[in-house]
Image (cartoon, rainbow, N blue to C red; front, side):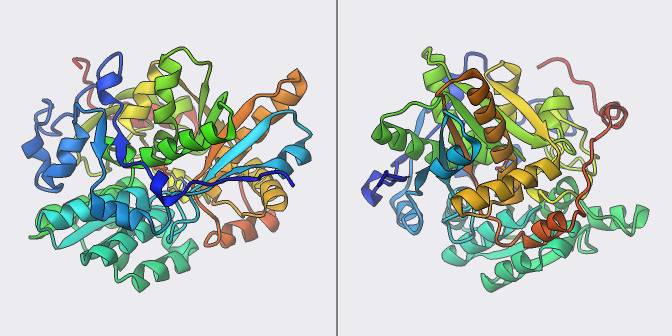
Length: 453
Ligand SMILES: Cc1ncc(COP(=O)(O)O)c(C=O)c1O
């Protein structure tokens, strides 16, 4: 029998997170204060984040130790397994070797708790009593709900309305862990009421839900805001995925040639691939492919420029690939990939030519999700299925070229709460949607033009 799984013991859980910031050849453009358009300082962020996370956001240290109390929580599901996808290779008849890291074994079912528990921990230490957040797919909301219940914090989740309707059981999950969940746009915030006045039928977007959660945190005593992706400290916490994967590849005696992941705000992919960027910088031949939906083509059609992280223009301006902060995406089923921007750190790596973008329509993505489920057993989250689509394309290329490349991807979550999406796919009800260039240009024309950083 062939070894399918590459497993680590609890003693192998990394003891630190890896921070790439000090090793970048050119520094990241600074986030700017949304009112003054000048670089922000730590105090600007202190209204909604604890100082420990603000320090991590800007840290000059390459390795940041993981506190012992967090190691204890991580050990509930870490280290996560890596699999060799022998059956998928066979189904594709490819000479490529396909490996995947599986983050769906965490209690909420994705990579998101890797940062949720860290954020809840540092907020608790800072004396915060309540956290607010947004959720698209419901994966992040359930991860933060799980984390808050562990650390005894209250949690309020603004859930993008289309996902609230599509995924009632994700909402139940958050409620089981003790959170309050409202569909966004809601009547609970000024930002939500303003959107509803303009469009009472609004299906919401991550940008709108972020505005609501940030406003709630800024206007309630003892409350902080927590973001599930995009920011440096979130990608930092997720590097635990890539650090474990490096050990697993060493154990398997292989080196990945292509590293693939899906991208919403960039946290699962950033966390998986960033520890390998060092190897690429040291001369190793590795390609990095970030995959997104054609309906939300941030890297493949967006522009690299300063934009707000939310619709109501409350967050700092960040230099990133963006489709414009008032972008309201089509209601595709990969709810977690419907964000107008992307992590500034990952955007920087795309701009530098280290990472390439790829975009796919949802129907072929689901074709490949089903192919994967039949071959490997796990039903992937629709977000993660975007990565699978790119893996299959790369494996076919290897077949055509007769190459035995090692293809690695992060299966960022399972799809067991996404079966409504699979139902729609099986009933031929999924529509493919390409976000038009004119709409992107129009949205970008409303952005402040900031050239100086
Ligand atoms: C399973 C899964 N994968 C990927 C993503 C995309 O987010 P990110 O790019 O931050 O990893 C999400 C977001 O909700 C998700 O639920």
